[in-house]
Image (tube, rainbow, N blue to C red; front, side, top):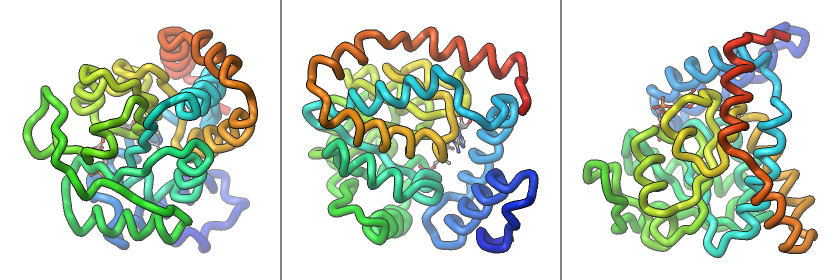
Length: 249
Ligand code: PTJ
């Protein structure tokens, strides 16, 4: 079913629309076929979260915005799922926080890298990196270790939605502060995160964009206090207990 063909009255409207976007992403050469499976895994967790944002995830999204605004060189890592699901919100976060957009793929492919960059530009991105990949992050095999020298290679804060666990752990070991969006609070990426956001990227990315717009006019001291007051372990534990309780709406 295409995005437009799903009636808003359908009880699973949001979920079906998200699926349609991922399918369209695969058809357009933006999303990897493995992205369909990743989406299915995410949906299972979202179902148990009642497909809504926990208060701790809302706080984490605000802290993420503060951290991007406070960073010296913030970078947003974009993969095929993120590009298909939330191109507008991703570009909005980049422009509100002056973060660089870098295409960084698990299933490496030059064609897909170019399709994703073009897609982000159609959605308003000025510049998209990920093509000068001669910096290395240690601890993982050669191809997946390569990142943009002027992007993730030089970043102090990286927003990595839906990253694979290996690379998230390697980036943390390289001293990057990581903001991770992942519906599975127990994933290795979430364990490695400085700011774990256990929420659907379709809700979390717009929330970060809105918070960034709000916080950019605040002074640096209040943003720093917001970051210092955040408890990552408590946020992960709250998501895990909500999922274990299976609070269905
Ligand atoms: O475009 P590429 O080549 O970089 O590939 C991207 C995927 C996502 C396919 C790749 O990184 C991958 O295979 O990831 P994993 O290891 O399957 O992990 C994906 C994680 O994202 C899982 O923990 C899912 O629960 C979670 N997830 C899936 N969909 C969403 C999500 N989290 C938030 N929002 C979603 N919509």
